[in-house]
Image (cartoon, rainbow, N blue to C red):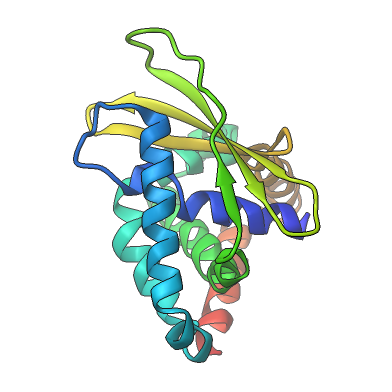
Amino acid sequence: MKRALLLFLLALFLSPGMAAEDKSGDPQALVRDTSERMLSVLRAQREQLEKHPERIYDLVNEIVIPHFDFSRISRWVLGKYWRQATPEQRRRFENEFRTLLVKTYATSLLEFIDDQFRYPPVRMKPGAKRVTVRTDVIRQGAQPVRIEYRLFRGRDGWKAYDVLVEGVSLVANYRSSFAEEIRKSGLDALIARLAEHNRKASAH
């Protein structure tokens, strides 16, 4: 599961939401161009990031966060509990969930600097609002890892709302584990746990 989450964050940080003056263009081109852009930044700053890995947070917040639809992901992760939550609970959960994803595995991006990426052809009907874009991560001495981005096109262009690693939805995984925790302890307890986890991560 941890490896899957690492790959989810890789997918998140290299997602097509980050790129793009052409907001209505080819989603695969956005994936490819953004991947190359992000990897280029990581490679250029490899030495500094190895000494100060916390600087990755700034890169993520600058490049990724404004363009990735965490609101939609948060709604789907909580499912029925989102509908039952107050506006304040929703705001707090979305903030803590986003911080969890960013801080927990941001430094792990350094593991992927030297990997290669392939982009099989995308099947998409003209005018489609939703599409799946596949990326194969080629790791030395290991089998390729298939990552599939589920994207939708809205007023702000293409944005990812789920990522599948080898066919497994990360949104579904979080949804299952969070639902169990909410049933046992309540949504406020889940938010408090995430906040405490994020606070400790920031202290290191």
